[in-house]
Amino acid sequence: MRVRAILEEAIARGTVPGAAFGVVFADGRRESLHLGLAQKEPEPVPLEAGTFFDLASLTKPLFTLKEVLRAVEEGLLDLDDPLSLHLPELLWLKDHPLKGKTIRELLAHTSGLPAWEAVYTWGEGQKLKARLLQYPWPLGRPTYSDIGYMLLGILLERVRGKPLGEFALPPGLTFSPPPEQSAATERCPWRGRVLRGQVHDENAFALGGAAGHAGLFGTLEGVLGELQALLQGRWLSRAAWEEMLTPHGERFLGWERKHPGWHGGSLASGGSFGHTGFTGVSVFLDPERGYAWALLTNAVHPTRHRPSIAPLRRAVGNTLAAEVS
Image 1 (tube, rainbow, N blue to C red):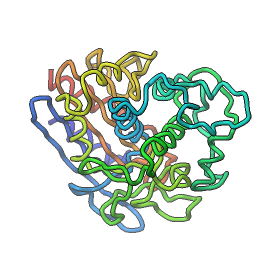
Image 2 (image 1 turned 180 degrees about the vertical axis):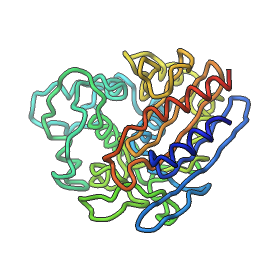
Image 3 (image 1 turned 180 degrees about the horizontal axis):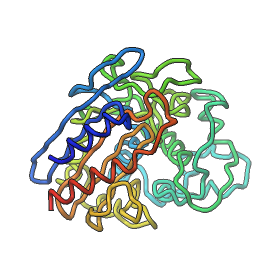
């Protein structure tokens, strides 16, 4: 497989310390490989099968989207419910348009909520969640928003009556990985150490480690299991799948559609979709050709200040598409 050579070269150049790659097919076939290091410092640790990666924003589609749609299937929510229906204390005593924003708009990143804010500097735990609900967020043009998914995480906790960290997860996915079995991320200047088995995203850490926008960890096999379930129609009902793939600009619900400059590569089929995560992780699905792939790396180790891995993702995606088709 040409992908191995591409990844070995990227590791040799120092683009990423290590990489776990896998491809799954709708007919049940699966291939995978693990290369390089799970940790470079303070001492080198080889990357092996079973290593947990910080999935960062893959939390959005693989957990939050799935759990929201599952709640819709069970009659607990509707995608067009306004947030205030389930979060009645939202902006209490304030007349603010956020109250009328729908679950669908947050899932599709069309609510106009800001992309990001350093909310970890505001507080932590329940106090921080309360402030997120009371803050008069400015609404502007639609943009990819961590804030929207933080609110969706709080909504899910309210609907299910338990914290996100207690939600049942498929094998290979967790909010609490064993540190010694996890790929290292950044030498965090805020926490003063190399992070291993602890969520890299500062806002997710302040929210308790499990949030709607980040916090999920997964092994390659665990992630591939979810991708194969999607391809085989076992992830959601057919009705939920069709609603999930309703276009909203360059996005579906929770996912990014193929478009010019897409990280999944220009040779993917037109109906392809995927998602990336800040730590260096990514997943892409090509339902038309019946395959999906995951590239999990710890690109932010030991620092986030390094070149983009978008060219690496595109090289892998294009090479794979050429081989499969």
